[in-house]
Image (cartoon, rainbow, N blue to C red):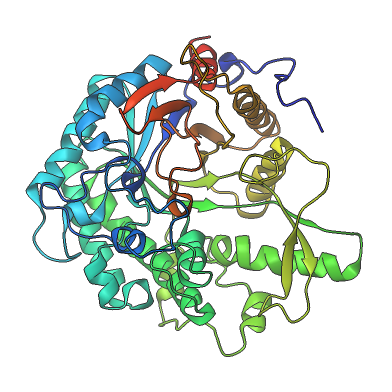
Length: 453
């Protein structure tokens, strides 16, 4: 097991990257905002999901979370103190349209307007994600992302938000991690809305990607000169052994995990090898849909956490694969393998195979079992090492010719970690949920030192 307390040598330096390289932190609305019943916000699928016993490990919800809705000036001051020049946040759809359709909620729009103004006043570039999983429950009651009508609703919502903020926000992400929305939410059922249907999950992917493509021209119309993209959760896929069966399994798994999203977004349609495996479960695709999905973007956002090691698993569903754990490797408290080199491999593969004009790491971070010391400090040296080594991986990727233009650490704050509730902490800032006190961890101090370097 490597010494996870040891920082890499030589240490990465901010000067190793171009002057125009963006350095930021990322958050999402349901995970930090709280105030779920205030100022006209409607119910989201996560409000309903959390209210059902057994869904969240500690029985909690995002009803209060980090109370960011009321404490955002303090949080933006914290971000500024780190030295970041960009901040990624998401807009809560139920705050803009309580039922997902119709007239916008002025108080919801005003909140994000104040947030954007606050970022600009602090010299921080706002990066807005339109959808980070909090679908209005009313739309779910009508079928949610499994229904094509939700595509139209998303485009209307995107129009409302970008008309209101597009004069100041010039970097837009349509969707965060559509794989998670589709498969964790509609196949495995571990995330909202808690559906377990492979066929539904496949159709949800199509509607998410279609809504992305339809929203792009709307965003560009309302936000002159804006850069628009999408963020995918991507993984380097490694065969569990040298056997032909495991190599074929890795290819199949890459098809459903990575290429099922990357291929249509880059004009190749859905991968034929995966379609052949789906049998009677292919998505319903209307003529013209694939052209819309392939609408050119300005960048691709990559959320990277870990590689996946894959073995052949005959009879295990349409793809017939299983993810296995390599023994003796470093892992986070989530059990995720720590592999900075995997990030290099992934970025080089995306650049080689798809050539997006720009790449951004829109999330990268780790959860460890943080301990608050008697003096109140949090010496999360493992997270310091994780950050430093993944930033060094970014430097290596850039040096190899990858057009990587920015890095957003996940996350600015400890927060509500979906089905894990508050049991997992990803923040570089510790949050005492009882008092809402923020304390910069050693990792946050390291990131600030790096950024001010």
